[in-house]
Length: 337
Image (tube, rainbow, N blue to C red; front, side, top):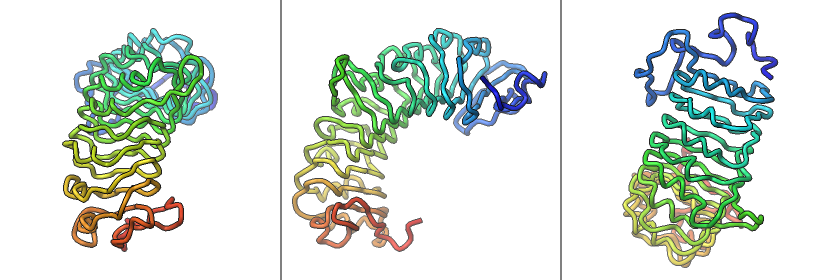
């Protein structure tokens, strides 16, 4: 149902319908190009129906637009059924599939996602594209995919090791958002995967996993491209040595409220000398924050704006903890903008 969507099935010029853009109207971000698409001016290239209250069965006839549709944006609607996704095979030009916040009927991520070989961004957070598997074939061949958001979902996996392994097959992946995700096996038992797959994400810049439970600690050999790492409330353990055994130069690291222990190595401040935010509070570290981190502060001419640690670790005075639980970190600079 597209009730309330202006002009649909009324105006004979479908390029004037709400949420529809044709070739000459399309505005993409600077990293997207459709120069190679040989389409006429009146070909639909963008269907964007975010928060339109769309409900019912999404038409498989969308495949008829497969040679020119670039954007399919259906986020934050009521519910949509599709029943089968073989029509994806004809979507030869689709670069953006954005369906988060809408209840879908799929049991897990459909394996047919792998047909979308031009896909650049995939947003399916808060959907019913969960309660099922993350199949390898869904991401096999998606060599242009740079962005994935799958927050607030639950997946059925066959093993801890394979839970996130499909993402390691994406050579262009830059941003991966996977917060508050739960895994279980076919019998409903909780599965807690390791973070080892991170070492295979050769192009990744930003990975956020807050409140998704992982086993073990931070893996060695994090990708050299990695700049932003969020692992708050993930249950990881071990020490911080992995931050020294990597080619990455982190700028933002949220490691707070876990079971990390041992000392806080001063060498991290040298290794990651472009740090802007570093949150360590809520762990079980020994000793205090080394003075080397003070040298990184903006007030001392460095880049570091926020440095959070437990109260007993802030003896140097260059880190902050605003309450007993260290749940809030105060900006150490005068200007937090």
